[in-house]
Length: 200
Picture 1 (cartoon, rainbow, N blue to C red):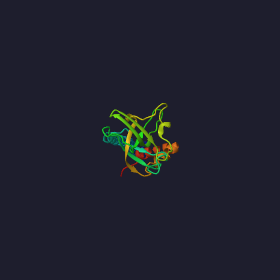
Picture 2: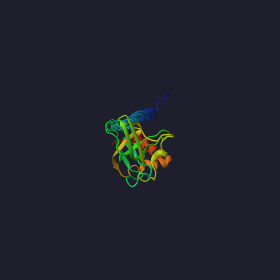
Picture 3: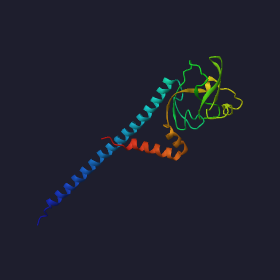
Picture 4: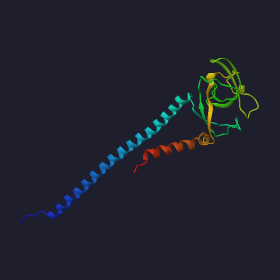
């Protein structure tokens, strides 16, 4: 008696192999697509960051100020400005500082710039100008805020002069500074959103 192979069994095994190969082929293209999609989202994120930097640099060139936008952090300039107001600055070196100008200046030993009004100016030459400032809501001038031994600001201390105002727009920045964990959580969320967001 001769052994006759079960043709139906071999046919079923062959179909199973074909199905498994088909699944494997489908999985690998999916994996390839996911990697390319992740790379595309990373590139998208990098473009958003670089665009923001280019806009900031462009504003610096147009305004002549290293900080074209600042947020009011205290109530020392009330009622002119309130905490959270966003100020737009320019810093035209050819335009001399005058009494009454609202300036943003930095002093040695302080990282955060100060927004106060000019109350006195002694101008000998364009390069030799002495400036005294004071907050509208303060009782005394700013000599107590300047660096030790400094009685006047120079023109180089001035970051810019206020030319525009957006009320309370900067409150987001203040909240982020008051609650650093919230700031990092928001940044992480935005980063994940950009990376994982699928375009239709």
